[in-house]
Length: 168
Ligand SMILES: [Zn+2]
Image (cartoon, rainbow, N blue to C red; front, side):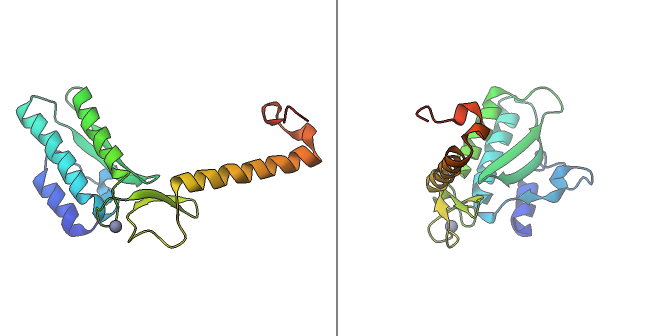
């Protein structure tokens, strides 16, 4: 995420991002995701901090923010108390929404696979040659079936029990 947006998140939510510039914190690496998720992360933080300030929920410290397998991962620590179910739910909601939010621009997008790399992109920002997650999974299953057919045909005794064809 670009520096300007990073700075704005830290300025708007200083208690959540108290570890942003602590040397041995993973948060020191910054927000390891694209600018398109800025609004989503900002809304998540606003909701969390509002509940902390006005509904007596314990203060959270964010320890890592990153993209993983085409989804936002937002890791927190709760130094004084225990994270509440409501806080968990708010974070999970944002993580789910990220799976349909283009990481480049924030428009509605879908999870795509590009040479095995998963990401969320709108039509405009989809890398050339990428396929939907469903298409990628179908292709992977097809390749597995083809490999198994080779074993089945040439060396069926080497196939693990559960993958042997019952009809053979
Ligand atoms: Zn986009």
